[in-house]
Image (cartoon, rainbow, N blue to C red; front, side, top):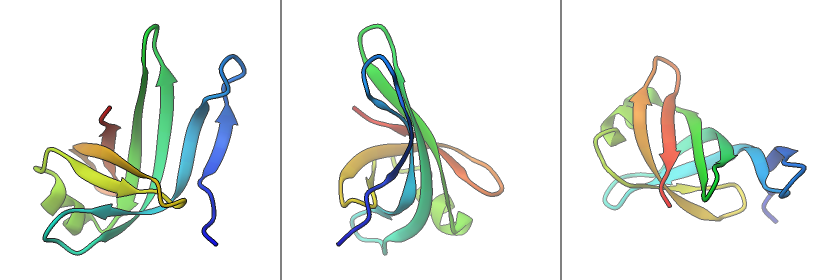
Length: 99
């Protein structure tokens, strides 16, 4: 049985998760999966919900994926979301969730 992603806090108004953390994989066609740890902050705007976060993993693998516009992030609970890497730092990469 897979462990559900850890939801650190819930919004009091709409019960959306504010921060989700866990272990996951970045999946890309034609490449080996990259093991990562993720932390995603969910933000509600006036008319939409957006998410931005960080992933920690092998930085050389993340560097190879940096220029790809859409990546698949497989969460701990096997859900998959589309993300894009926007920045690379020394220890982590910054991602945005697409859609």
